[in-house]
Length: 214
Image (cartoon, rainbow, N blue to C red; front, side, top):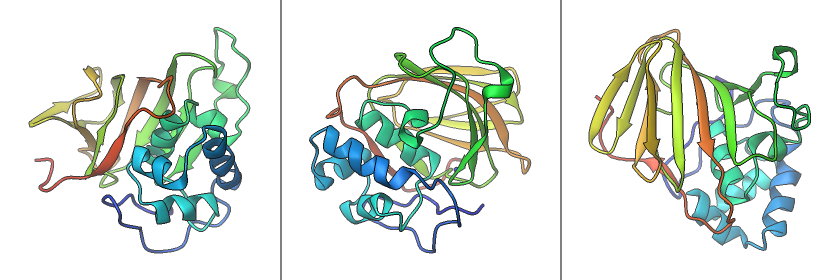
């Protein structure tokens, strides 16, 4: 999940300044979406697994969100990462052309929108670099499906660790605590699909847990 900040435990803020020019439009959109959802800063931060101070810094542009943070906030606000960032994705056409998939970097992860907005699922092609966000556990309503395109992935589901190679897939209930990390120094490339929440008040929790992924 490089030049942007790394995600931290609940209530902790990451050190360092955001990368110059990274995700310039996200701060005002985060604030507007929160207000549109009628959520206080404290309630939105709690639902996304962030501290209120950290979310405040994201909304004022003092910090830049990682991709997991964007996914968390998009779920809380009932929208997609693309819409949250103000990206233009071709309508709701059934076919998304490669030329229309512009890469975006967030927190070291690189992702490409692989689906249109306004659907019940969000599809992404994601590159996860080695040593990035491997300690972040995610718990939220819905389902996730991922498919390894290149490299090797370490997937922790609850108390079980799975190692996936190119061609392997995983489909799981995302209320199961889960973490992902790249096994190889070149990182891992995935197809990733997750269901979007319909309620902005649905609970979601992000943050490292004790121990490693081994």
